Image (tube, rainbow, N blue to C red; front, side, top):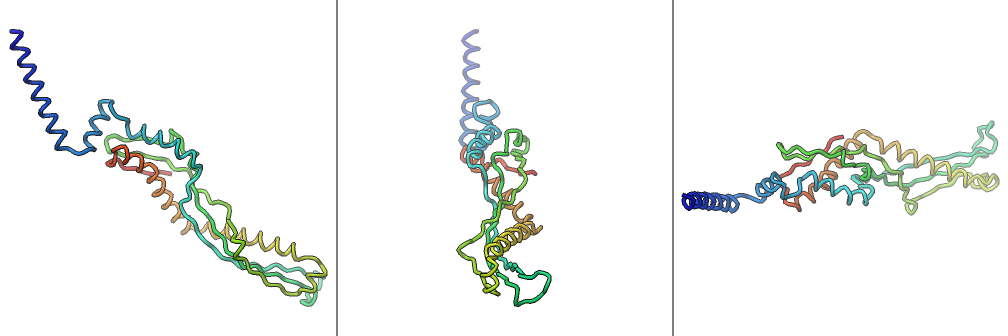
Length: 216
């Protein structure tokens, strides 16, 4: 009796083993990973994404878009401000370009920013608000023009006019970078760039079927 039971159990084991082997051979890697994930023999996509945060935090920030602007600024100094006489005034014009970067603070993405829906195979990432970095003025591309050189020399106002023009250029770049169309484009780029940061390690771990959804 015992031999018969053992024989049946052994036969069932061989059948299960054969079916399992056939299933393993004729299914793809994604299905294998799902099975291993369910039985606890493989890291879950959420665990892999959480581990990836350590690498992202070291990078500090991610530039998702960079836009170049150009501006022309004019500042004026009148020797006698109460008399609108051009002969007693001096002006300096600054023409310069600058770059503005739109960035994501990667260190602001915490484990609490991540969630995983196993039913839809979707990793959800809550993205930090997009930041606009301080404009970077292209000093080598600067061009200036002077008017009223004698008054400028007598009053020593050239440095003050340069300072005013530089500040106005920075303000101009900041304002231009806030244009709705540019911000919208940067947000789209931010979502795509951040999704890639999580898709790469997931794909490398064999989870190419997992979708990354960015929320804000």
